[in-house]
Length: 147
Image (tube, rainbow, N blue to C red):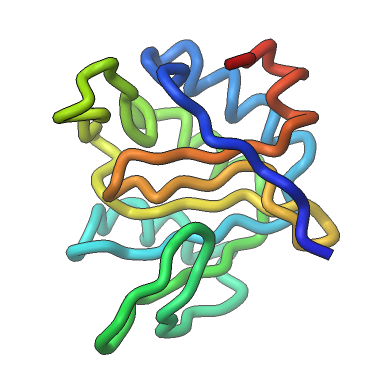
């Protein structure tokens, strides 16, 4: 059964919010998926390697369908050490009110990321390269994020 998620708009605008999100996710996440878009940050994959479950080429992932050869998806066991590395980033991206440029790229780059619970339901995921993030409604309430 696929869980419902909701689009986050104009919420991820600070490093503080990035940290709050990661704190909430760390308690609930069992698996993290990272999909490489346009190369990406090699340090991210280096830090994920000790926790790597699977590496595969995919054409579909949370929020995205891609043609052609697809992209590399890394499935990673959630671990406190890897969460500490994710906390070093400024954020996955920054939301903006500008309809022509609805997000700012951060030092995380354009990789898409998903955090899944023990049943495989998405708690939070991004289509970072397009500037969208989606969150489980219960997690949104826990973080006091409301539209």
